[in-house]
Length: 96
Image (tube, rainbow, N blue to C red; front, side):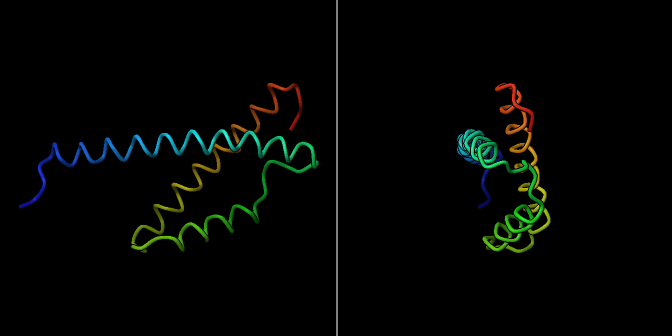
């Protein structure tokens, strides 16, 4: 028998809690990345690194049907991470 809609929604709610906690942790580490990049005179954007990350994350998939969605998801996370880095540096009155 298939799951009920409520069971599905409950599962998604629990997964979303985990995603939010991990997202927040990721963004907090992004500030550490900004500190490192600042002290080593590195740009926020590194296109080679982003492509490497996308390839590595897609390789983690069990179901390759999610390749395009995973690339979009990870690109969005990286874009948000770059925004966090930029804003963090701005709060320190440092130009990125």
